[in-house]
Image (tube, rainbow, N blue to C red; front, side, top):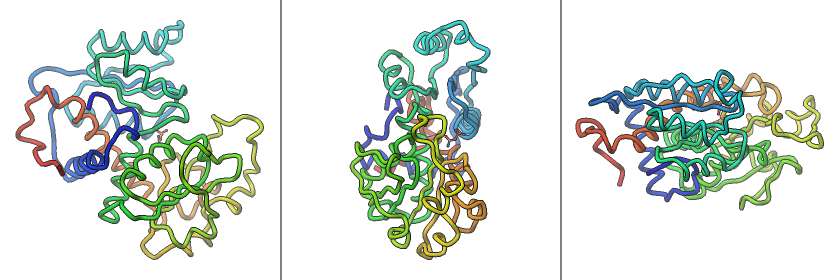
Length: 307
Ligand code: CP
């Protein structure tokens, strides 16, 4: 693996091997990627982030990497430097991998073709969010021990959601039955998945994955009545009570409580929302390991792969 930019590029056995590797890190496997020399990485976040940025930083530090202290608002980006020149500069200075979040769709994929160091997509506009997808796959795998054949309902602002896109690609590759539920103007017909009525589908699902309403990506014409959204399109307590006994609730967060999900359900027994955040550290360790470990002798660490 040279870069980690899209879930579209993986085959089923590659995704399963990554999930297995996340599990090894979760179970205490450790890797020091800076055994012989100091190694640096940089996290370039052109959009706000709490979970992704902080969990990458924890993952990097757990693996012995030095994290360059880069902040867009205190950098030469403010003098007009392009994202491409900024990324090339950090690579020239010594960053051996770049984690990039940017509002422009496909920009991370484009940067990956321009740089000699590995690039990780931490969210490109409404394009993809592949490390979120990996932690989501792991969350589901931990729960059910498989992904094939599960009914997974992704609900909400599909058209603006990079999480929906990455998960739909990956879950399809792994043989899950993916369904979407969204109000008409938030449906994305470019994705080959059926749209279903939430009230009709809720009893069949193993996973109900809510999405944050991405207000920052909405045009004015998308304006919606926040007061009635939960009852019409969100996960209410009444809908949760109709879910299968073992079904789980997921959400990539941050959560708009009482908008896409009832406040009382965010930490209910079925919710895995904070577990997803916990697993995010190990998912990011697996990605970093795949991109950076080949130059390091780690024969005493991860040896077992699924395939
Ligand atoms: N889920 C997610 O990407 O959260 P952040 O925007 O806080 O990183």
